[in-house]
Structure formats: C-alpha cells, structure tokens
Amino acid sequence: MKIRLFLAGALLATSALATTVLAKPVVIKFSHVVAENTPKGKMANRFKELVEKRLPGKVEVKVFPSAQLFGDNKVLEAMLLGDVQIAAPSLSKFKRYTKKLQVFDLPFLFNDMQAVEKFQKSPEGLKLLSSMQKKGLQGLGYIHNGLKQLSANTKVKTPADAKNLKFRIMASDVLAAQFQAIDAMPLKKPFSEVFTLLQTKAIDGQENTWSNIYSKKFFEVQPFISETNHGVLDYMVVTSTEFWSELPVDIRAEVKKSLDEAIIYGNKVAAEKAVKDRQRIIDSKRSEVVAISAAERKKWINAMRPVWKKFEKQIGKKLIAAAEASNQ
Ligand code: SIN
Image 1 (cartoon, rainbow, N blue to C red):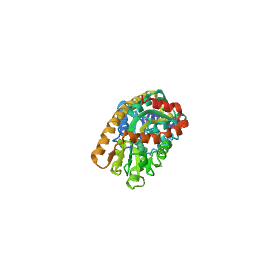
Image 2: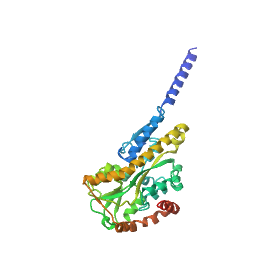
Image 3: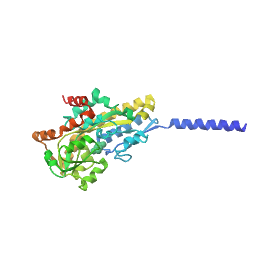
C-alpha cells in the first residue's frame, strides 16, 4: 500500500513538473553588436515587442545590444551551441560558413541601396538565405544599414591619399583585398574595439555607415570622413537550423511574421539615419565630410575593381552578374 501511494505521488509530481516545463516560454536570445539607437538595434527591439504581444507567455525575447553577450567573432559559434537563438551579423562576417556572401563586400558593386534591396529580393539573393544550412545556420531575412564611408586622420580624396594608412576592417578577405588594392594596410578587428583603436591612433581610419560612425562616436576621433559610398554594410538575420525546425509550426509562423515586420521597420530607420546621422555629424563640426568628385570616384573604382576578379571563383561569376544587374 505504502509503495502504491509512493508511486502515485511520484507520478503526480512528475506530471506536475512536466506541465511546468511545458508551460515555460521559449526564450529567444537575440545578440548584436551595435547600439540600440541604430537600424539593427531598433529592429531587434521592435521584434521583441511584436513577438511578446502576439505570443504572450509562449515566447520571450531577450535582446543583448552592444556585444554585451557575444561579439560578432563568437556569436555564430555560440548559436550552433544553442547559447543564442538569433543574431544579425554584417554580411561581411560569414566567411567561415559560406564564401558566397562575399558578393556583398565587392567594392563599387551596388550603385545605391535600391540596387541592394533589389538583389536581396531577387531569386539569387533569397537563395543565399539558405546557403549555410549544411553548416547549421538558416538566414531569415536581410536588414539594411547602408553604404560605407571612409574615415581617417588625414584628408582622403583619392586612393593615393590612402596609401600606407592603416584601416580597421571587418573580418572579410574581400575587404582586406580592397584596401591592399590601394596600397593601404587593412586590420581585421572587432567592432567593439574600433573607437579605442581610433582614439589611441593605433589605426588611421576605418570604413562604416553614417549610422555606425555616429552612434559609436567615431566622428569625434576622426577629423575627416570621405563620402565614398564604396560598399554596402547590411545584415543577415540568422538562426540555427536546429532551433528553427524544433519550434512548433504555429509559433514559428508568428515569429517569422514579427521578424518580417520588424525588418520593414528597421529598413525605414536605416534610410532615415543615413540622412540624419550624416547631418548630425556635419552639424557637430567635429569631423569634415569630404566630397568625392566624379573624376575622383573613377580613380577609386579603377583601383578597387580588380578585387572582383580575384574573388570570382569563390563567389561565382553568375552571382556577381546577378548582383550587378540589380543596378538596372
Ligand atoms: C555592425 O554594424 O553590426 C558592425 C559593423 C562593423 O563591424 O563595422
């Protein structure tokens, strides 16, 4: 009798425990490296708002900005270990998982953000979202930041002005080749270290968007920003294939819907910030925005364009052609 009672009690306790476990919300940790007041930061916060409104008690989103949880050099490894569920690294930071995304780093490939958007929405662009499935990563969408500008300690108008200068770059071989093509010295460093490297003059310059240059205060320690618009800095929102496939179908659909909406919002913020943050920097008078004439731009293109050929095999000729065609 005593044994039967004990067993019944144990059974009850187990099922109560199971209910508690089942009732626990799915936790999505979203880790990124930029400030909250940026296109990506605002997108992540909007995603949290939408998901928690639509799936109360079922899904909880914890957003970790400014590399508080993981830097971009660690976040994808952490994702594969299940320590983070969503991240949105710059498209320049995926080279360990696919060489194809290097297409976005090719200098002077896209004329403007409309072309970037068109390519990302094209069949070739959408296919790239699944290009890392075999490595355990699934792209869920793209989010814009914008076109990159070149900041430096000295006035840089032509490639010759950048010769021998040390530039921080993201961990991308294409970006390294881009600076080597103009006889400058590229240095791969995490985003979180850039301000100090600039402030201490350990490096001479860096390339980034208006939003990142403003939100990370690079303009306070860089007297010149050349308006080169030489490349794009956008992101892929990624998750692990394991986490994504294990989500219940109805929850997955709501999470994806929320993400799509958050991305539309983030892209709107990106377009506004590209204009407003540029103006804020000009108004601050801490840094001079250096205009690049059409003739000078031609010099940059001539110097950097050979980089395309160098990476053609790794990226694929057809993919480069599809990206270039989005300018039409
Ligand atoms: C980011 O915008 O996420 C970081 C970009 C960088 O590393 O420069």
